[in-house]
Length: 295
Image 1: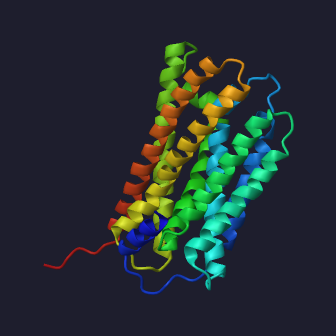
Image 2: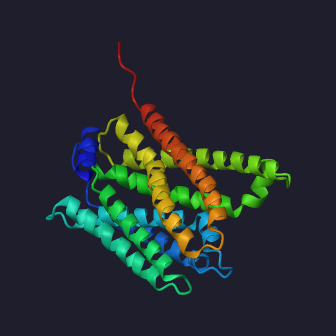
Image 3: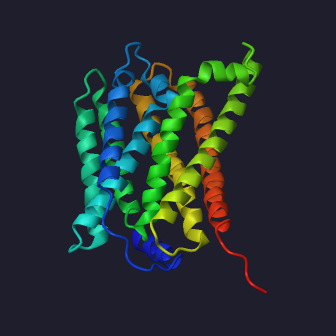
């Protein structure tokens, strides 16, 4: 599958020269983000109230999964640039898998969780790292690098918005009633997804443009849409993991399943918004640089 994606991506553009090996700083930032997410979510992974499923419903597992995918992809890109004598698919996949395994080992040291839940999280991180490593096989690599950078910026943006959500909900019309709060939450979710798509799409365009490679518009479309694709893949892993966690640790699994279903629908909508808005933004930004045909 990764080889098919790689050959398809190569056909999207013609390169003047192969881009130089790079990605060390991106690998460092992505791994640092994964460590930061693990540290920040450590308390939520050890529930004091006994309701682990509700803590997971707040989105911690999705954050962890996306951080694992990004770290695996960034490490794969860096390893491919360093170990050029070996087959690229092998190098990137192994680098991503190792990153996921190391993150999984960190989860295994978390105390206070049911052993089954720990293993679910560890396996989810291992899978996320492997998926990220597989993604970094796609060529030209600048598309993946642009997508990883845009996704990291989007995650930081969403965390800032979440930190300010109380007063932002009031701006969007939250009045204390269930209906008012739900409507305000919907408007806020739509707005932040649209803004994140615009931000990530333009950033992806800039990264691809500055690479110096001669690429056609589908390359920009894919680079800008990668954050949305990763968001959807992360949601799929999250749904499978949470379904297992609910049976292991929740005091009210039926109630939490309802919550998770609602949050899952919201995450899918966010992923679709990031994909379409980000892809279109990058493509339109590239289109504005094209010179009109001479008649």
